[in-house]
Length: 488
Image (cartoon, rainbow, N blue to C red; front, side, top):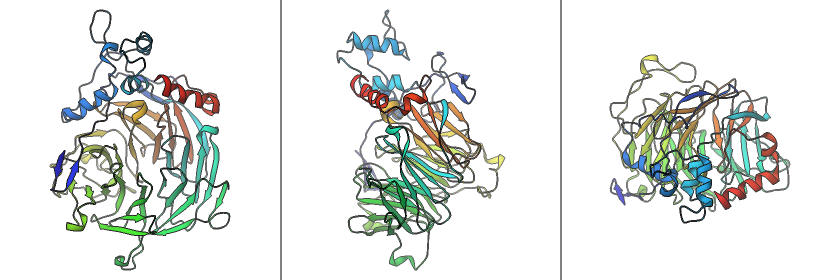
């Protein structure tokens, strides 16, 4: 256990990934630039990447010791799928089946870079696109008042076509409840609307075919100020929502009591992104245009109203935060054109440093592209993508298939970038779109990634050897999932 600021207690939990051996090579379709893991060339890990996260990474995707030795007893990594399967069939590990690390060692080598295939094309900008927790549903939100929920297991059939209510500017965020019965959507308004996803009605026209109840996040101490909501997320138990707003504040909404239960004046600028750190709901991460990431412990907020700590390192505003789910590590995307990996035990005081520019219409200053914050407390920094014009999102790759071995992100230059978390190497660049890619989502179980763009396209990428027919077949998808569960 670790103590931070006298109140924040963090479990030392471990998730992670193995080092990737890479060499750049052109993808077979010319659209995806992929780095080959079978060449034997190794890139050195980050000098500032602490040993603990590197070791956790290896544990998450390194196969059983008896599977990684060749006939002479020497270690051989990575282990080919054929050797892995042969070792499992001969029960060399003594378990009779693959462990989760064995599975990740195989599946993490098959990146979703083949394609893309068009899922949908809309006449307005796509702002949000995310798989549900079990991968059976996919949500896409567009600037033109539309949200579509696709049933992935039924050939991407539209399960719900939502025409939103009282939309201001665009849909800024959506979130599915853990039981996948409800979806909330936010815009530049203090009202978040909630939709019954499980109803039989396919066409969900706000307050015409279905009721879209409004959840009012404004409170008595707002002074009548109307703010917008940039980010909204369900808690793991589905009882609360957390939201980040243009009023520099974080709000927690109690769904059972139907009211705001907590307001934190959290930053000195827009709060662009918030999320619960883990399933306990005690910790909240926030990122703002003031360039700080902050950690909030709800167990001590009533006592001091201050964050448990501040994480300093970005030179510009934060556009998105994704938690690793262990209550310790998270990543953030910044307008300084970097993704940063954080360990919340490394906290700092407020130290600000920035260049005068506006990411909405200006290019990032060339003299700042390689600059480093003098008080950078991040574990690692990833560069190569572009964060301009909109709040570009970044994520850890799935735990089930990759052991969270990679980080992936959209980009203003219309690409999706995939980085190796340990080495920082750019292992794939997906090229198709003609406008900024604001959001993208990796399927939680299959080697499939979906990207959406301001060009209106929603497309899917799969691993080499996958086919469009296979991904649209219910029987094959169910069989494939059962195969993973039974054998991998």
